[in-house]
Amino acid sequence: MEFLVATGVGWVTACGLYLLLRGRSFPVVLGLSLLGYAVNVFIFAMGRLWHDAAPVLGGAGEVADPLPQALVLTAIVIGFATTGFVVELALRSRHESGTDHVDGQRDEGAAR
Image 1 (cartoon, one colour):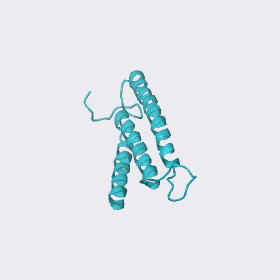
Image 2: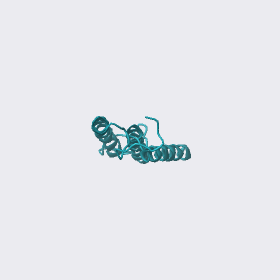
Image 3: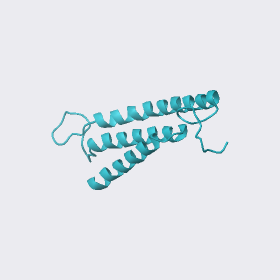
Image 4: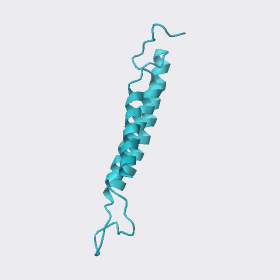
């Protein structure tokens, strides 16, 4: 199972980096989102899943660490807000420059 989770996080990270390096705005936004998801799954997997364990100290036996789950929930909210902001920036850039390329210039061989 650990190999499967590590492979999944690796593939999502690789796909996010590939999309991040594209020349258009929408794939860049998708790449940033995928990288955020990969980091969230990585943090969540490092915190482990506990069964029948108390989330705080106070008793004998196993206790679960609630910090990774709290960090992931916070990161989800921040990632959603950041994605909305980046989408708005991409739309504004498209409106201002007339193209959705990241550098604001059209490809030489692209159809217009």
